[in-house]
Amino acid sequence: MTPLHLPLHVLKFGGTSLGSAERIEHVGQIVALAAGDARIVVVVSAMGGVTSDLVEATRLAAEGDEAYLAVLDRIIKAHDEPLAELPSEQDREQVRAAYQVWSEELEDRLHGISLVRECTARTLDTVLAFGELVSSMLLASVLRKSGLDADACDARRLVVTDDAFGGARVDRESTAERFRGHFAATDTLQVVTGFIAANPGGETTTLGRGGSDYTAALLGADLPADRLEIWTDVDGVMSADPRLVPDAFPLPKLSYDELMELSHFGAKVVHPRSVHPARERGIPLFIRNTFNLDCEGTLVSED
Image 1 (spheres, rainbow, N blue to C red):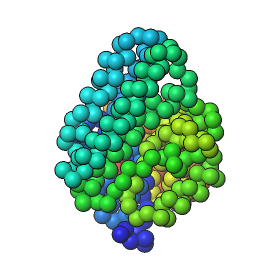
Image 2: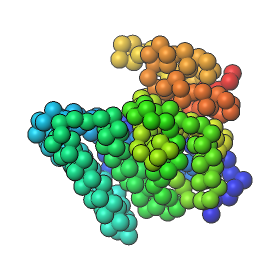
Image 3: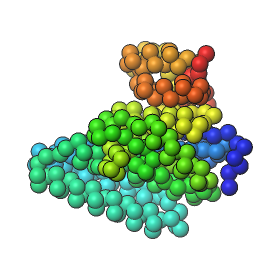
């Protein structure tokens, strides 16, 4: 049981951080280290490239192009290595069984789309859920193998939205109530899916661009957390676009207002709407590089 007096930290990992079995293992090490002196909630995106492939497979299926089958095969193969390497012997059968169910549902859904040659936003959201369901399950398995009590958590049970499929709006009051109820009832470290949610009728929705960051920020604000960490593949908010300016460097500190302004003008490290919940509660936001732990990244706060 995790002592309740410990601070609560929410850690979010994007797709590049979870791009392979080796990277998921590395993320597990980061989480295990953080769990040494804090209660941890983890939020994850799908493995790198999987969401884009799901969108592409759906587009091709809706056009009646059988090339969607090759993309589907690529999606399945992307998970083969993690499924073989990451779960413990004790976990492997259960993890593979869950994956088998989800992959068969995905194949059936895409086949149906190819038959009717149409894909609504509602159907696409259901397809896109696949990536995060798998990544959350894989990371939870890695954490259990390292000795932590961890479970994958399907955010569709917690995040309540309207019916705007593809870019749903969160019902903050209902979602906050579900967050608090769920986390008050468990001491198990939760690995939460990032941008999938559900409307009041239980239909799958997605939160659109920046949705995983937003879910992490809402968790941080509503639980509330003492610290929110966004783990990505850059050293923080950079002084300039490093693709254009070779000597760009990470800014050590920013205010919430400065980060939102930079985000609106094209900085893509954090989506602007993800800043608002942290700002409401005054929760310090750290932007860190999964692949450069020596870099302290950028701290975003009121100052």
